[in-house]
Length: 169
Image (cartoon, rainbow, N blue to C red):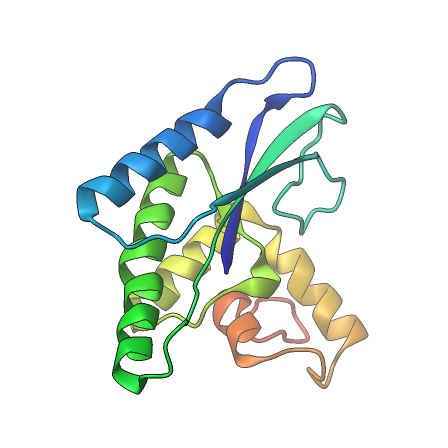
């Protein structure tokens, strides 16, 4: 499963980006002939005060939509499972990622998929720096986890390795 989150107005006044996103996703699935299983999960939450939350928002009445796409592997056939996985991580996730750019959608940083190229790593780092307070996060990582026990290579790819000066290099 891969899930993204994006703002959709407030609890009192939804800007309808939640439904526009879903319409674009469904149109893309049909246009690209992607064998997308149903259901596509959609849920809503209030804004979070956590700076590292995909649902971060300064308005306490802020509304965020979460959209999750699912990857099923019903077959025991190795090659069919590889094809399904490639279709999901490639075509389906790329479609949702492309649509999500217009809506400032982001996946939860702790649920990131491993980028498949150096260019995707660079794009991911740029996006993370625009979306999250990466320098502040890396300073906290260095202070509270100086040996990087709670880190992994995906977190390091997204945010850089924490360092004593907080530069994330």
